Length: 93
Image (cartoon, rainbow, N blue to C red; front, side):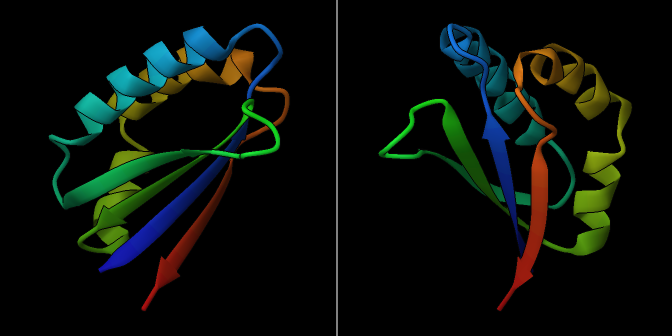
């Protein structure tokens, strides 16, 4: 089992758009093979700085989702409202 930490910086004025798109992404992610759970967090000092922490059965399952056409389509609506590329960190116990 692995955890995936995704860090995103949202452009000013785009927070509601981001939240709507990220909810859609989480709903689709939940049906992906190997997805166990996910949580979203906001930086207490900057609400436009967001983190997602997802639990996956394996690196292989995460990579399958990460490279899927479904995720790429979802990211097409999220990437333009980020001020910098998302950062992804894989963690294990």
